[in-house]
Image 1 (cartoon, rainbow, N blue to C red):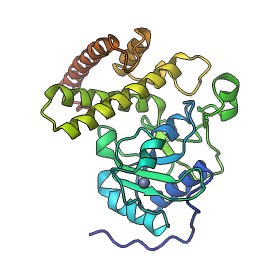
Image 2: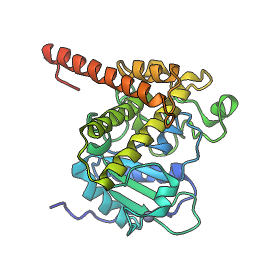
Image 3: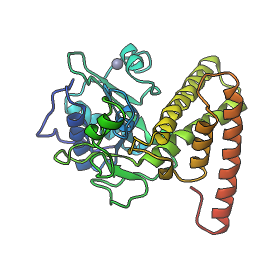
Length: 294
Ligand SMILES: [Zn+2]
């Protein structure tokens, strides 16, 4: 049984007009409650240069902390949406899978949706982030104000007007995955769903959901690959991605793999199969060296 948290002394208007302020508020709320959380999806990759406006806030929460995180948001006046599976606004504003907790305000703010996702569903093989600011050399996490990320103005000159870019140092630090790890996470999701497709035996609705997600990760990889290849984009490059994921993403770009184009499906399948085998061998070698499997 979780202890009942006391209401927080500060509050935020939600829906919000500024995603960065919402994120900073939520990051502080979670850190102070001992919940190691980080942002993901469009709001995170837009910081790395993805050219899309983010109108929702997406969070990854380690599974045991989900009930506590949900309670804290309720106490901070974030309104829980009653239609978690069928919400049309959620579907219209993001490609993300159905969230584990979905807050949705009516109103004129630009950001009126906030979603929580159980970490095991999306980035289960990664360690939890630390509370507060990660070490500058943390292999997995960084803050959204990390000096290595170009600012929106720098993206504006070279790439796109709608990327968020590096966030302000003046706001409470918000955590996200480092770019290369984010890509690795998306490739792992694609690989995992491919396994489920190959095995088959799902019900029709379940199969539809699996296919929808499989396609989402493919489209996201299209974008991430384009960001890596564009030299003007300093937010993400192939060198940020560890092998064997780097080889997979580079191969996808070089072969011109784009989601939803007939013949390309076969090339992509082949790439995933090669990656699966390389990962299997890598894990065997690590095991033999006594370093455990990632
Ligand atoms: Zn909703």
